[in-house]
Length: 171
Image (cartoon, rainbow, N blue to C red; front, side, top):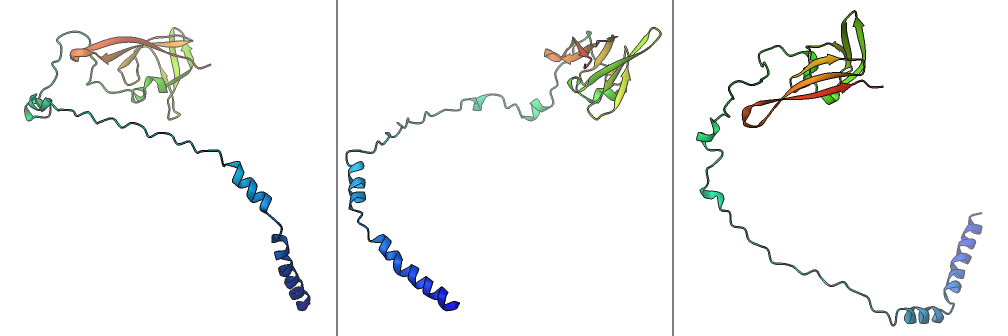
């Protein structure tokens, strides 16, 4: 059996050169004539513009990081609205308002509560006077469709600005 395999291998190897001896002159002629008239197109190099120099002229201005500037604080306005920073934070104040979802309401008599789901999956109830969100938002009205909230946001010159917003129920 081994001799049959060896004989077959010798026969295949001896027949291979017969395949390669065919005339390939027509193929060589085709390759030479196909691209004879064609010239490769080369895109021109982009023009390199000289770099414009910049002279830094703020060296003689006041250094914002000097020790004299680090101790400065913005003046606090007298009067106006301001959040009570000494009061204890409520659980819903640790989340931004857009991360909270109102999922329903509960009511008993005249008192209504909003059912609010926090991003961590916990469910809370809140009513008028409770605080929500990270901008000192105080609930001013609870309805079946939404919560009306009055936030205190920092304004210019160290003052605080009241901003009305709402948190609508998810259907």
